[in-house]
Image (cartoon, rainbow over all chains, first blue to last red; front, top):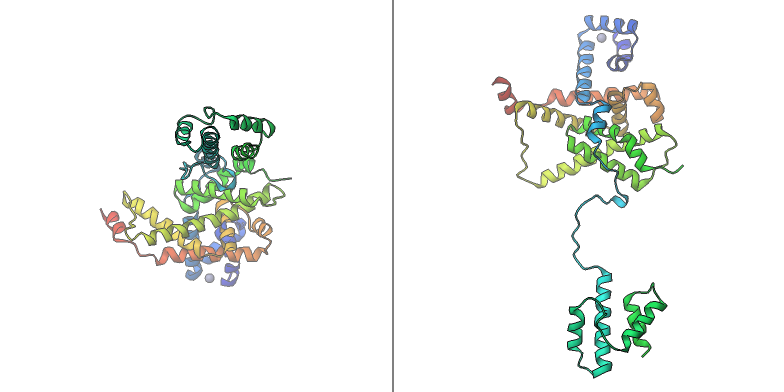
Length: 159
Length: 171
Ligand SMILES: [Zn+2]
């Protein structure tokens, strides 16, 4: 074997893909040719570095057993603190203020401050009195899927 | 047939971890890579006709994710002036140095060179199998393999041993 043939078979030699007669011939050439020997040894050492930390599939299975599948939209499980209140919360409070203010206005003129604070102190519009509340309730029955704000507006529009 | 990412995750996560760990050599980094690879699968929903195509896709994306994460990490480290690697022993330093050399070598490769190296060193594929998977000629696959190994050899050969490692060796 000459240097040219050796180098043609170098990849197979380093990768262990040569059959035994070919391998024997290559090793024989390496004993007589320092340059080819150094080249092959250097590449074998590099392959050893690359393969140094290859674990078995069984070991990899153990290491990944606790992993959960990724969630859609690239959302990783994490605690996300909400910076602003939910829109539905804002709409609910807006409806309560609107109803309380409007009912205060309809019953006693513009003296609604007390009613507003009272309405906000309790949960929702249950304590807000007046016919607007009835209209609001009716609107809710009529349009169960509508938002609190649109029901309030509907109730006001029916006055 | 639509790709079921969850099934693919369950059957292939260990394989992806194995590739990632062989390249990163850090358990936590490898776990991050597994998550990132399947997130990309979830985002992109690649058309994969069979398990072999899925494995080929995963191998390619794993290589990309590993490289991307390294680049992001080195950018972060560059921003933090006080970044100093810590290690408990000379052996750990040496292992880390070797891993860093491997990083640098793998990062310098073309994607095809890297894929040939991964197929050969991690999955013991034949050159014929690698060539078929990548749609290249067998001699090209062999050339990529030798170039990739040469890049690793060059990094290892030209690396200066640090004073820490030398001190560890003499003590
Ligand atoms: Zn020779």
